[in-house]
Image 1 (cartoon, rainbow, N blue to C red):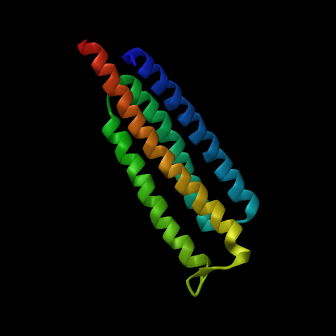
Image 2: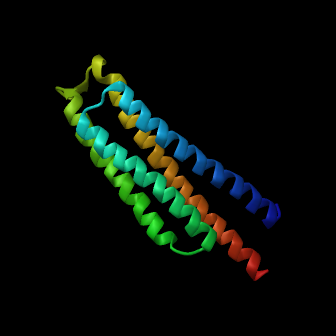
Length: 142
């Protein structure tokens, strides 16, 4: 496949993934509001989702400029680490004898499911942006 076609496919995937992450972050905040998650969880996850949206926008700028991707990556990895730590805290708070009760399963799946899915998507977004920069540099050298 030609480099220009690869770049077009990577661009489509990259910007679609950006839109999906932003849309799901907003849906995550709305879902937490409607289900009655604990207040400290709402506050932490609202801040987390807003930082994720802002970092996606920053990553778009960094990818287009082919600069500052390291900072964007560090922020993504810090957000993933926060997701893991909050997941442990939420699990500890919602579990009884190490098990999630049926009453809490919907709340737990919304909080943990959305945040883990968004974390995985953000790491894929970062890698895809890195690949776009590599393709751009390959085109310059030819």
